Length: 128
Image (cartoon, rainbow, N blue to C red):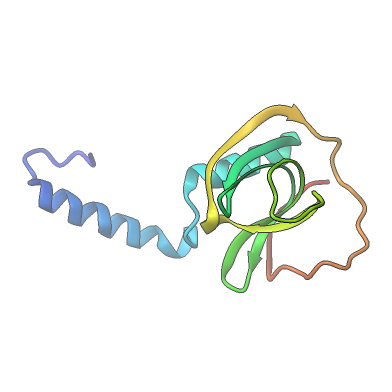
């Protein structure tokens, strides 16, 4: 695992947990692969597909940031299922996202907005 030959499974679990905790302040609970997928999709303007609130969603990710100690994306939902009648802009938090995949299909890029959505505390990435 970390190159500790002869270590017991219990000590490897403890080392793994300590390593995870040491990285905690940097990651702010973001799974590294999810972070990479979001940044890839945004930089290459590709759609994301994932499950959120028990519904499969297809979205154009436009803003990636942190609000009220939660990491999330502001995205325009263009396909999949929704609890609302109309697809459109959604703020979705990463803790609720599962089964994320970057799709091959692209979107045009930045969309001018009315500015009526709430602001983020920290911006990680914005599509230009």
